[in-house]
Image (cartoon, rainbow, N blue to C red; front, side, top):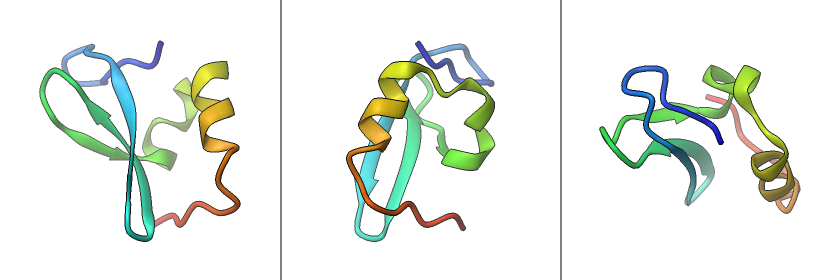
Length: 57
């Protein structure tokens, strides 16, 4: 399970128009994928693999 660097809550994948990010279910902070890339687990990697491109800001 990926955890928020700030509060250690669970990070969830959120999709929006032209954007994929990770959002904490506890504190609500949103992270760009590259900010938490060192934590990507198999579950997140599988979900992210469903999209053909991820735009990095």
